[in-house]
Length: 333
Image 1 (cartoon, rainbow, N blue to C red):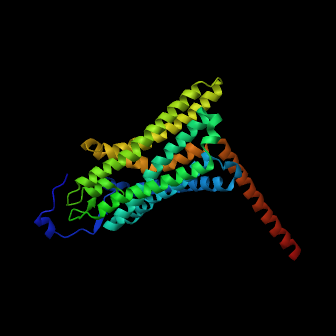
Image 2: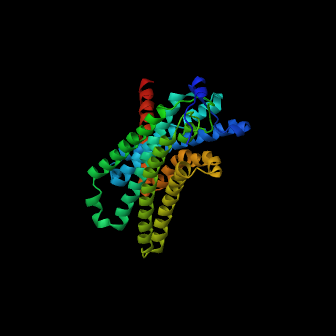
Image 3: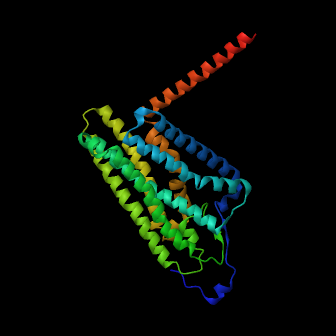
């Protein structure tokens, strides 16, 4: 809890710009970091956009599972784009300044998308639970209308809930220092720079983070525990190993995502954890959108087949165009 603004603070200049310190202690590695994060961003965008295109184009992928995966890919495309382009620009040009309004706007979109992803991942795990543990009831429970309602509800809840925090943040005053010790505009580094009383905002942020991380994580964990229990009862050793490999990789990814969010937003009171916030933020903000397309979609047989068909169709169309052009040249000669 911070003290209220005194007369000396009132006379100080109000800060209108922040400086994002980023990875300030690694200045000699700026070029390497730029190339690394550029490759991560390109691969993330290509992987997620490819999944969106396949889910939309291929009729046999119009199922609840791929509807959720398509929305996750769309969300990850937006999610990573709220952080990496700005960070890449800073690494390339050295310009780390950002307006206070721009900083709060970045956090609004990042926080909204993170809250939406928490809900969406829990719904995906519940979908897999019904498909594997309750296959006879799956079609009745997970119909298209319910899927749309769940996804739309997740997006709306994520964007509306964070708006409360944004309104409270917009009332803060900043009178120095103006250095944000992070590579993007996150909640706690911004709050730490306020020269006013932030206790109410901190309590509200804690409640918001608890609601959007702990219940979805517990639901996801419970779903995968039931799924793994069902898998262990599969008589075929090969089928059991394949299913267990897939589910365990899903569980590892969601545990890293939820776990790092919980550490940063709920448990970062200790100095040791606070110093590692940047590292944890890289996990849930950069690496998770990178691996999700591979873990959830690109390893699946249906997606591989759809990708193979789409590639073959494009090649046939390209070859046909080449042949037509050659035929036209022949007749012209």
